[in-house]
Length: 590
Image (cartoon, rainbow, N blue to C red):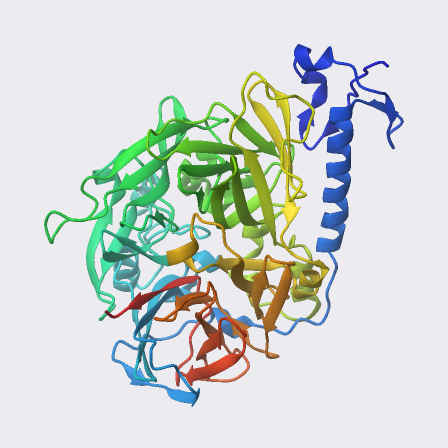
C-alpha cells in the first residue's frame, strides 16, 4: 500500500496543499482518467467533479423559437385608485388581505432609457382580496430617484446598469467636475416588500429603504440603514423569527477593506415613529479579497445559525467608485471568477461567533435560498443554484426585448438554475477523520474534511430529470410561517424555459416529484403560499401568482391555485397592463 497525492486541481482546490497529517496516511493507489494516481480523497472529489460536469452539460441544452416578451418590460402608468377585477372561477372567501408586489414599472425617463431590468422605477402593486372579490391598485414609489428623474425629465440618478450623464444645464467646467463625484446610492427600492417591527418597507440592496402604507401604497418615510449601524446597504431578503426578530446582511467598506455584516433588528417598537432603532451588527466577516467582496442577494438561516454564502461573483470596488469618471455602471464592476471556491460561513445567532470551520464548495452562483434547518448534528441547506455566475449581465433590457434567433442566443448563454441541497456537519473536532464522507447515507450530498478547519462539500440535486425540460427553477417559496428553519416537504417556484418564469412548479421532496401549472404564452411571477385558516398539512392553502400576458392587451391576472392539488381555483383579471415584477408578500387582514 502506498499513498501518492495527485496534483490535479479539482473544483478549485489544489490537493497538493492537503495538510501533512493527511498526506502521511496510506491509501491504495487508484489510476484515474487523467493518468494520475489518486489518493482516496482525490478520488472522491474526482467523482464529484464528473457529476458536476455531466450536470452542467444537461443544463445547457439549447432551445429555439422562443416567443418575444418585450411587453413584459414596457413602461406603464400607475393606478393609485382601486379598480375592480373580473373573477373567473372562485376566489376562496377565507382569503382576506392584500397581495403586495414590487418590481420595475418605468423604463424610460424623457428620451433616455434605462439599460438594465433592475434599473426600472419601482412600481408597487396591491391585490386586495375580500369576500371572494379582488381589487387592484398600483403606485410608483415616491423615492428620491423617482422625484429627481421626474423633475429633470431625464435619468438624474445612476442605477445598477445605467450611469447618469452630467446635467446639460451646467456649464462645461461643472459637467467635467461632476464626473469626479462619488456615485450616490439609489433609493429606487424595486425588489421586495419586507417587514421590520410590524411595519412594511420596500427595499433594494442599497442603504436606503422606504416605509410604506400597505393599504394606500403611499411612501411614508425614507429610512437609511447607515444612520443606525455601520453598513453601506442591506439585502432585500431578511429572515424573521416567530417573535418578529429579524436578521439581515449588509456590507461595510473601511480602510482595512470590505466586511460582511450580520444584522439583527428587534421585534417590536417602543414608539410609533420608530424604524430601525435598536438594530445591531451581530458580527463582521472580512472579505477574502478586501477590494473585491462577493456579491450576495440573500442568505440562509436555520434555528441557531445564519449561513453566509461567499460566492465567486465579485464586485470590483475601484471600478464601482470610479464609474462616474469612466462612464461605467455598477453592473460593469461585477465579474464571475470560476477559479475560486464558494465558502459557507456559519454564524451563531445568539453569540455572533463565526464558526472556525470553513465549508467549501465548487464555484456556484445562488440568488435565493429555499430553506435551512438542523437535524442530527447537521445543517441542511437548500438553495437554487447554478454552475455559472454571469446571468446578471444578460438581463439588460435590450436582451429582454429581442426576438428570433437573437433572443434564443441570449437564453442559451444562461446557465440553468436548479434546487440543490448541501449537508454541513456541525461537529468537527480533533477526532473527525480526514478523507471520509461525514454525511449520513440518506443524502447523496457529501462533506469531506480536507484540512484542520476546512470541509469540502458537494450537493444533492433536489429534483428529478423531469425538471430539466422546464428550464430549472427559481423564485423559490415555502410555507414560511410554519416551516422556515424546520424540516419541510414542499417548495414552490417558477420554471424558466424563457428569460422569465413561464411555469409554476410544486416540488415534493418525498420522491422528488413535481406538479406543474402552465398555459402557453403566459408568464407567472414568484408563487407565494398563503395557508388556510384551518390548515393541518404543510400544503393546506393556496398559491398566489401574478400572471403576465405580453401577447394580449390588458389581461394580466392574479392566479389562485390549490396548493395541494396545484390546480387552478380561480383568477382575477386586471384591466390594465402590468410589467413582470420581482418579489411579493401576503399581508393578512386580522
